[in-house]
Length: 171
Image 1 (spheres, rainbow, N blue to C red):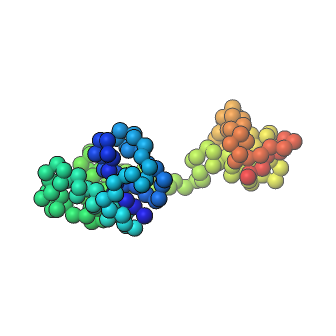
Image 2: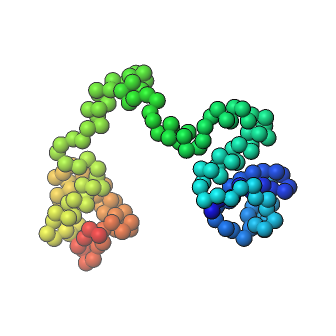
Image 3: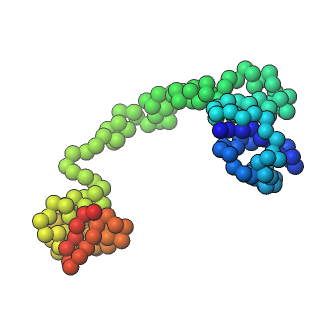
């Protein structure tokens, strides 16, 4: 249920969703019981409530004709999902070569470049994932010892890994 309501103090219009017992004006913050709020329309359709409120605001400002030429919220929302310009044209107009951008965005072979993902993969792959074995394998894959130690600690604190008696496990 959606209702277009108005404030008796400042004349603001807003949309209430549901059946709250009271509401606060978004402009002056006056709290009013629902039964004392002036309700202009009640509907099950949120778009209809937005259209009614917008029409009322347009009428207040003397822009009813302009508002009638715009269309409903549903139509406007549908139009905003359509791209105005394609990605290649946008990149080219910004001085970026679209082919180079596509090549840079393409996934690279040779495994994960994300250190966290790489470390989790190492822990998962080891039969006995002790800190020393994890450090050795991670160093072979290009990670520095200090970085791995810090990452292990962070991953345990965040709950991605667990450590018990010197052995790590992926959660």
